[in-house]
Every structure is written in structure tokens, then in C-alpha cells.
Image (cartoon, rainbow, N blue to C red; front, side):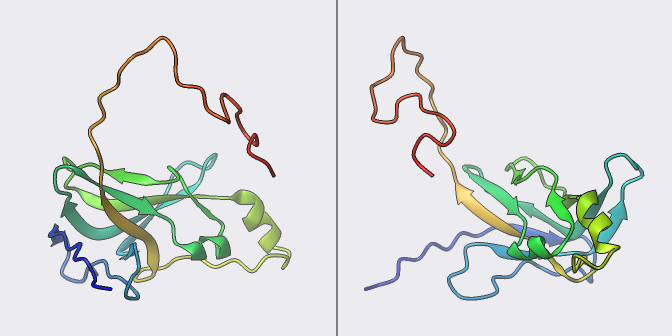
Length: 160
């Protein structure tokens, strides 16, 4: 089997000399690891978060989108990526940042030794970046949609 080349050139800029460029950890990985360059805590005590700057900016090509996901190691932290999945449009060329909400219940339990909590620090891998093509969608309004087996069955309608 021959491997098809899916190489896409993307312009990237280090905003600081010590910033780390995203890297694929292993051959075949879909997402590139993003590294923490800065940490800025919120000043909002009601909904605390940490904003991680990566110290890099990219120019996503037209017809593509950058998607920013948390890493699987997020489960070892009290963090939740505030917007679930970050979207970087081709028009945005500012610093890539990840804003993590802090789950106060996890932090509260960790004070009693029930949960082993880890935090991300400067230089740590804090997320993943995927750059994917997307279609421009032409919506066609209709009076009826085709019938399907599932129909309008909502949450949990396909089984357990």
C-alpha cells in the first residue's frame, strides 16, 4: 500500500524566541501538541480559569480551520477547556490561547487527599491543534426532509 501525501504548508510565527513550535509526538498522530508559554489566572472568583498562551501564531490557509482540543491528560487536572473546542478561522493571526475553567469540586476534594490533581506549567503540553479542510455549505430550505430510520429521535435514541 502506498502512502498518500497530505502535506499542507502553514505559516507559523514564534511571538517570543523561547516559544515552542507545535509538534507531532508520534508518526501518524492527528493533532500537534501545543505548549504553554504563559499562564494568566482570571480575576473572576466566581468562575475561575487559567489562560495559557502558546507564544505562537499561525496563518490558517483559506478553506481550512484550526481546531484546538484538550489533551487526554486533561482528566488528571481540575481543568475543563472553556469553549470545549477552539476554532481558529483563517482570518485570525493572533496568539493561540487556551482558556481552562477550573472545576472547583475537583479542587475541593483534592484538599482532602481524595483526588490526585495535576496542573499544567510553563513548557508543558497543554492542548492539541488540528488543521482540517472544511466545505462552504449552501443551505437549501425545503418543506420536508427525507425519511430516515432514526427520524427525529434525539438524545439516546440509538441505544445505550
